[in-house]
Length: 198
Image 1: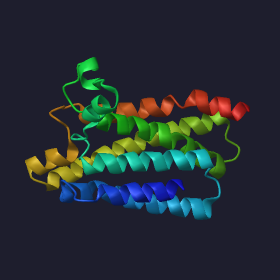
Image 2: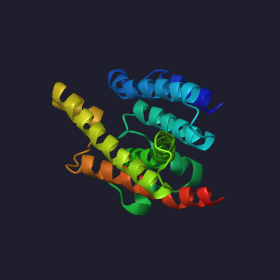
Image 3: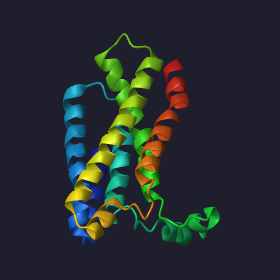
Image 4: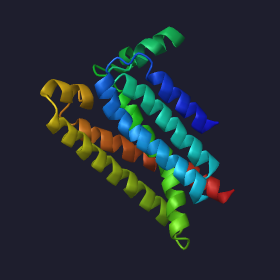
């Protein structure tokens, strides 16, 4: 059900795309991720239901972000329409922070699966050791992703690179994105520890 929902969100995100070329660039990793997730689920046998659903949730939100190129996601307008509350006004934000949310959720949503993978590959690992490996993997994956974005930006015109990367004039954008993923990953520890004690 979760996988079918992600496929539906992915398909809907492509209805009358606003920026088809840039969305296609963002969607490349989505397609690879969906294929990898399906392969792991069918062949691995080690990925728990909760971790699978968390990854599906992340990919669904990434599809939403890709449609609006991250920096144009109208989350503030959505929040005002639903609740009458403006996150941007409440926190004094000048930039669109949806990309920060996605990087944070990358850490939150992938850490349980990475921990399960570590314990599957090396059964002798203690929980803390497997968690450390999972956090380090999130950190490394975030770094590689930022390098990937940088490499794509080098191949594009300055305007196209800005549209794709969505730095919004923030010279520390890559650093903040990696930090958010790391913080998200670290914050899963209490939940992981609690679930291991049950």
